[in-house]
Image (tube, rainbow, N blue to C red; front, side, top):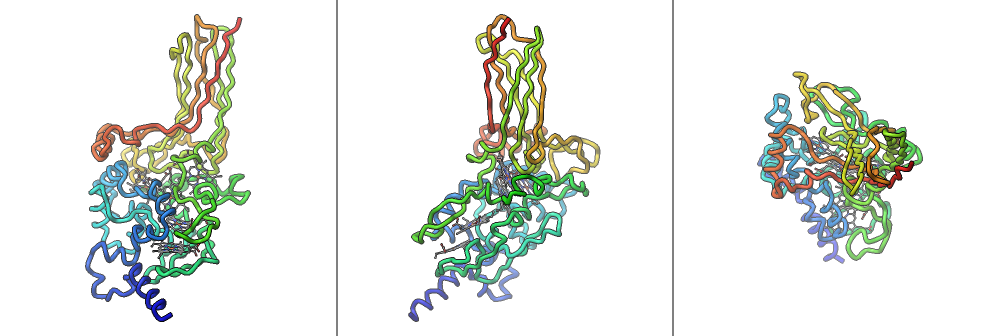
Length: 405
Ligand code: HEC
Ligand code: HEC
Ligand code: HEC
Ligand code: HEC
Ligand code: HEC
């Protein structure tokens, strides 16, 4: 019995040694100090293997070292407005909020491209005790220096590494909104820098869905290695990657041939309860492509529509960086659950009995000025093969249309 109590103390101390660090040591800017307050995800892996492996495949696990992040962080830090060095990390490695004097360490690690420092990992979410939605963007309140991790279970099993506490916040959108609702811009764009739109008025949200319902789908399994099976939450955060994408939109395609002229009407039904795309980074685009394939499946006509938000900087020039944006130039984002109708008119394909109408909706590849794209390419170990240069298909439809007499 005494051995057991001792084991608890030792293990708790190993995960959260910060509580035992003398005050004088806290002026030394080093990583271990940060990781005493925000235990590294490696420490959780031992007991939460499934969660760890799911999280590791998610975009969240690369939040401070994707090539696009590194290139745009650099653009921000060298820009006229880049005085608050913590800005990008406030969401991409939010423990900077508690360690703002160590921001250079975050910058150096991100720039090195292979950070040992966590970005948005386990402690960065599970130490959030409260989210203040009155602030814009909403702000998290971290509880550090204790040994408690917050989560969804009231009936948690005790363990030797940490204490647990149930917080209803973990099943509410509020937890996500502190990073996903809006991003600060150069000047106050008002509602314009808001990423999700009127999500809270959507049918999905009004029917009781939270961000977690779709982006952390429930399953049954072990929450910690060897524990009994129960309801758990997927930590691979499906969005642009994963099966959830198939639920993003439906396409309805009508083709009308009128002699030499053909008109294709496409209805794009967004099933997403928030903006599509979410408008940060500012180059995020969803593209509707139309291809008409005539004789021998040769493309005889192509056109597209682009959904996104474009900005102007203080000099009135277009910019792909929201941190420089002072004005919205154009906003064609698909609003929550919106249906958008597009018409395309072109000459009816000749010398063929039928033609194909191919319509596809996809997330566009990164776009922007050539020097920036070259920088992203240079930052990536895969060069121009980096996934950020590839579009991601959401849905596609092909119809074969008879030309008739
Ligand atoms: C501490 C800030 C933070 C919190 C809290 C947070 N996220 Fe994120 N999230 C990010 C960042 C940063 C990225 C982008 C990572 C990258 O690609 O660099 C991201 C990416 C994502 C993606 C992938 C998006 C895509 O384009 O495919 C999804 C889905 C997501 N988050 C859902 C959630 C949900 C659901 C919650 C709440 C349970 C949540 N996030 C809470 C910061 C956060
Ligand atoms: C308020 C929170 C917040 C702030 C501040 C923020 N980001 Fe993000 N960032 C996010 C979220 C959330 C995502 C994921 C968006 C999505 O997938 O829809 C993201 C995604 C990105 C991406 C695309 C994913 C990737 O890693 O390639 C880049 C690039 C990026 N941010 C750069 C920056 C830079 C540079 C700054 C500072 C100027 C910054 N962000 C500030 C929340 C934030
Ligand atoms: C020594 C093993 C061990 C380690 C190390 C460990 N955990 Fe746990 N954790 C558990 C066990 C066991 C449970 C209870 C699971 C259950 O009730 O099904 C748990 C539960 C949790 C819960 C749910 C709490 C609740 O009330 O909802 C969260 C969140 C959590 N751990 C996060 C973490 C994080 C983050 C880390 C790393 C900083 C970590 N754990 C490290 C064993 C561990
Ligand atoms: C972006 C925020 C976020 C990150 C990052 C995150 N979690 Fe979670 N986690 C949540 C939320 C939200 C829930 C509750 C989901 C629900 O019940 O709908 C949860 C639930 C859990 C649970 C209980 C349910 C289950 O699936 O077992 C454990 C244990 C857990 N997280 C551990 C971890 C560990 C370990 C990591 C790092 C590998 C991690 N979490 C990373 C937000 C996060
Ligand atoms: C009813 C299900 C549903 C709910 C609820 C929901 N989403 Fe989504 N979300 C989707 C679908 C579907 C997609 C499209 C997947 C894709 O990007 O192709 C998506 C995409 C995303 C993306 C990546 C897309 C992009 O354009 O960058 C992020 C980030 C995101 N959601 C965050 C959130 C947040 C934060 C909440 C809560 C406020 C939320 N979602 C609520 C269904 C949902």
